[in-house]
Image (cartoon, rainbow, N blue to C red):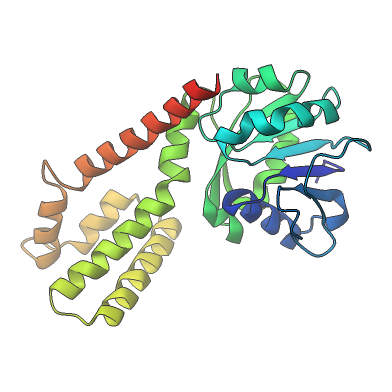
Length: 266
């Protein structure tokens, strides 16, 4: 990786998933410092602190992974410890570039929106950067590559949608798996068996979709025979009040919340 020293402020579910993936794919633990309130050890060889150090070398890159509501609690000490040109990678949902620049003057800011499958290298990382810095962009590409699909957004507003579709998407999919299993139980399957079948079906179908040269819509058509049982089920999902309408409302609600958080951080 192109960054010699990295501070990670907050190492919760998302930030921790990114850090562990980097460590398992070659990041030297000695280059990483985790700063979190508990001060609890993060991983072998990784320095862990309970507060921003008052002296010492500033990091080349700072991964900001606290809850958006905590931004103002950590911004002052962090800004004082950073040097001009430090790369700030923010994974704070809804917190805009201007809000970050106001709190971290002189930093080179990159917004990132990952999802939890980055932990196994099969995630999505949406990225946005206001400044035109090709070398920095290439370095961020290299940093994020072990996490999964890396997608740059030209429009900052698109990051709210990325947060809803990719960031929140795994949670929505997990709900679908549970609903599929519950429907199997309602139709007569034992609870554990239905859960096992539902999860294996989704895992297998997702893997096949990822390897296919056609889109999911076409793949669904290949499963559904005219007049068959799959077609009858798709008729329900494809109805006016079906899955498409439900997901549109779901994503809209998540996007709206991201924009509320953005307004609160301004």
